[in-house]
Figure 1 (cartoon, rainbow, N blue to C red):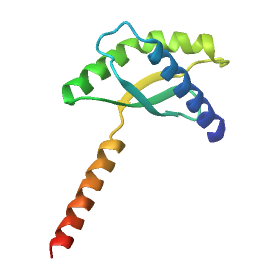
Figure 2 (figure 1 turned 180 degrees about the vertical axis):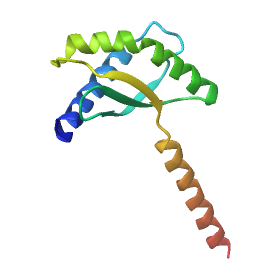
Figure 3 (figure 1 turned 120 degrees about the horizontal axis):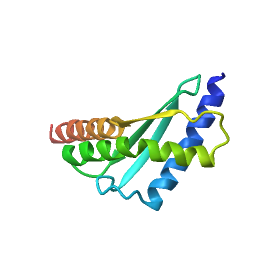
Figure 4 (figure 1 turned 45 degrees about the vertical axis):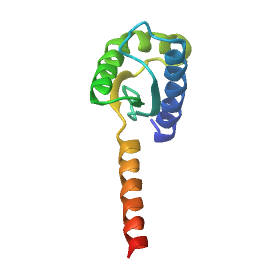
Length: 118
């Protein structure tokens, strides 16, 4: 399969999961979640779903557990909404890129402040 197809499928899965989460899962562990990216393997068997969540490490862990337990439900709902012979298995991972970007930005601000005082 082409990487272009897996990219398109990933985008579609991202939209659908985001919509399902907006509708609301009944799991109280899943709060304010943003699906940032979905990477699908070239054979469309696995989808890595990257997410961010407001809160601390505990909130992150709770949300990861909640999404993992909802994976079967979400996959079933995706099967109803997407025209795929086989819906990929969903693996949820916390997206650290936002945290990393914020850390870089704060370091750059700190450097700028030190340069201004010199």
